[in-house]
Length: 265
Image 1 (cartoon, rainbow, N blue to C red):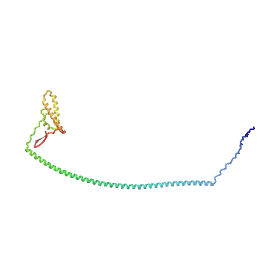
Image 2 (tube, rainbow, N blue to C red):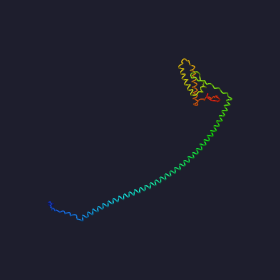
Image 3 (cartoon, one colour):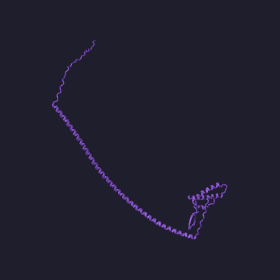
Image 4 (tube, helix red, strand yellow):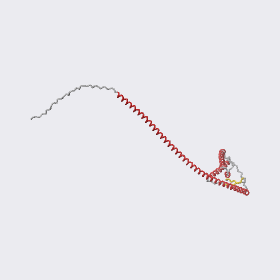
């Protein structure tokens, strides 16, 4: 049996060919000189640029002047508005102050009238009370004069009917036991006198008891102790009377130099 054979053709590599390009020198064209016409255009352009700059500068100056003028007008408007408002405010303040002053004057007038009315009423009441007090005082003086006259008549009648009592000679109170005080005599003493007598008697009792130990002055010591006890009793009774728990001393009448006097006893 015959086999089919595949024949692969052989590829021979080809070496590329080197092509040599010849070097061509291109000569640079020479710059031609600026023609006179081109020079004139440059000066015109420079001149135009200068004019534009000048115009810009002028415009800037004009703009600054416009801004300053606008600012000045704005300030004038503000100043004018402020002056108008200040004038309006000043006018309103004056009107308000005038209204307040008027109201204060009206209130002061009303208050003054009320005070005058009250003062007139009070003065009228004071005069009326003074007149009443004067009438009462005059009546009281007349009544007192009548009472004095009646008392004088009563004393004259008593002097003609009742025999005047003789004055009792008061015995001197001894603080060394020479005598013994009675309760009636002690009740006529003041509180200060009783206090002084009690102090003296207490000192004398202590002195006698220390000095006379054999009973030489026993009677004087006994009298001083009894006098001390009576004075203490009178002092305690007066204290109870002041507190409202004791009995008041009886009143006694005594005729001295044509008049009747009352004392406790």
